[in-house]
Length: 208
Image 1 (spheres, helix red, strand yellow):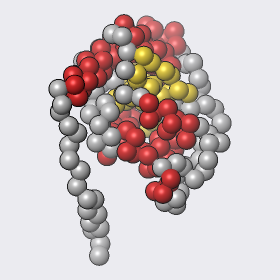
Image 2 (image 1 turned 135 degrees about the vertical axis):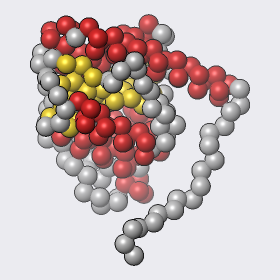
Image 3 (image 1 turned 120 degrees about the vertical axis):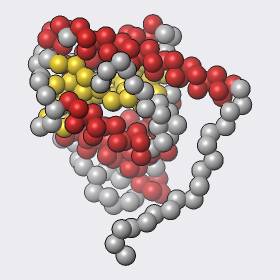
């Protein structure tokens, strides 16, 4: 079993990375393999809704900013943790642009695989940012993994985050809960429990 952890911070090994590393350690202690994928600090193009990905399952912008690389890694992952910093009471812009394109072009890659969102902030805006990220899971048929509190850490530097003892404990709970759900899903597969039967998509516009 493997969990792919997405670091949506343009600042690399800073606060978001510190939170994800705490989760990764908890997952590894449960025998789950982990990989942290960094979005990087180069510009990330937003989705333009061109629809070209419907035929290919890949974003038409290519791989200049890593979106298609992440999609390929996601195919081999069993679960996901998406981490992002809080910017103006929302998840950081590069993280959102990146994930918009991932989920628009390859939502089937994420379906029925557990996901969780994690945010880091200096002071506030964390719950709004979590709400923004959680919407990706609920549109892609992903089980949402919870912890003992909202999945957030506070601090303006990694050292400050490490002083947020409650926040780090929340991260460890999240890792163990993710491992438990992954093992439960594996046991279900071994017992012959099939995935839900899909229906043909119905799309209703409000103005016709």
